[in-house]
Amino acid sequence: MPKRAKTPPIYHRGGYTLDWDRKADGSLRSPFLAVFWYDAATRRIRSASTRTGDAVAGRKFLDALYLQNSQGEAVCHACGQALNGHGGSILLATAIGNYLATEVDEKASAEAIRHRLAHIVNYLGTLQSADISCDQVDEPWVARFRKWMIARPIVSPTGKTRPRSPATVENSVLQLQAVINAAHARGDARKPAQFRPIAAKQVNRTPRHRADVDQLAAMFRYCIDPAPDAARSPEERQRRIRERQALHRFLIVSVATLARPDAAHDVSLDPRRSQWDATHGVLDLNPRGRRQTRKYRATVWMPYQVRPHLDATKGFFVGPLSVKKSWEAMAAEIGLPGEGEAGMKLVRRSMAQLLRRPDLKVPVEQVELQLGHRRIESTSELYAPFQPDYLPDARRAIETIIDEIEAVVPGAFHRSDTGEKPNVVPIKAAQ
Image (cartoon, rainbow, N blue to C red; front, side):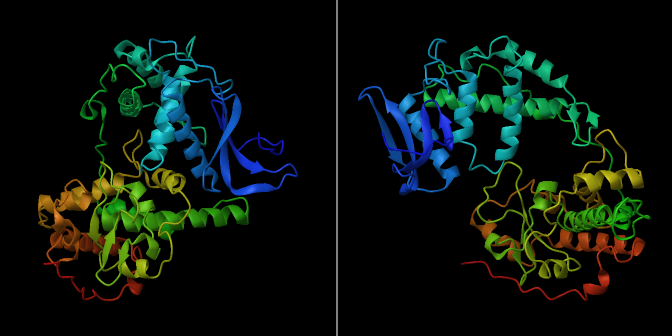
């Protein structure tokens, strides 16, 4: 067995250990991490180089090797003994671990998937025995999970509680179905999921409140003309100023693009992300390297009032601060309704309704394209956003709404810095 320093390993799973391969004196034998495990057939410790010095990549290598060598058998992480005693079906907890290790990291929704499955793991911890196999998860089991989860309110970091919606519960059920079906596809479970998630349209409750131009203007007024700050210290006042600035930028990009909150936060002017084409005034809400998901991120024209802001920015437009806390403070101050009616998606929903005003004359198809609810299929999708006839009515209507907000709150979009409407140079589609 290679000599290694007596320090905790970087990662351990089912008898497989990720660590540096060291000499007797503690120096590294290789610049790459290695995986060590006991081979019962040869009665010796074996090792395999990960060919990387990155711990995250090393963990993925170990997980893949573990799954390959265990051949679907559930193994105790502490002792390495087989736990697969349920008629050939892998334990649910192990299936969740395998799914997270092999099928989640590359997905754009990885963080949301982990949160949804964490509820399943927490529920397993409340049972008399957590040794539940994938084949034992049926409709009655899922019904009990739904009852348990709906009874647990959502608690914010500040301690505020609110009821959990059925849609949140069903997201975890949907992810549980994906875990069991993946285990079945690998041969770790005898059956696919023996239950069905409830359709989203049956559990989703879309908020009905929509903000008009005056209320959108009030949001901007909160950011650029705040009430006297009663913060106890200069540091606290500076923090609140930074939060309002981030909220202001969030409002600007949300009104200009109708993006979902996560996409608005994700707008970056880093050239490596290839989102902003300043020459043609086109913004791709889906950065380079990110896979499109079911919640499609559109490519949109930016209103002429907003383009100078993007041109003057480096890195993320909204910034590193989350605006959720400042949004809640703003909502309370200007009197937005509660009970889930005025979350951060309110700007997107309100702008979508404003674009349907009869006087703006925006075709429904353009509203759907702007929202990402409709896609332009085929090769033309690559070139359509650079044509003058791409979303012309939607772009004109958004610019009109921005002018209306500016009329109520001068300086909301810093009009003095934006200048006149620029000439936009279209790109001809490839022949």
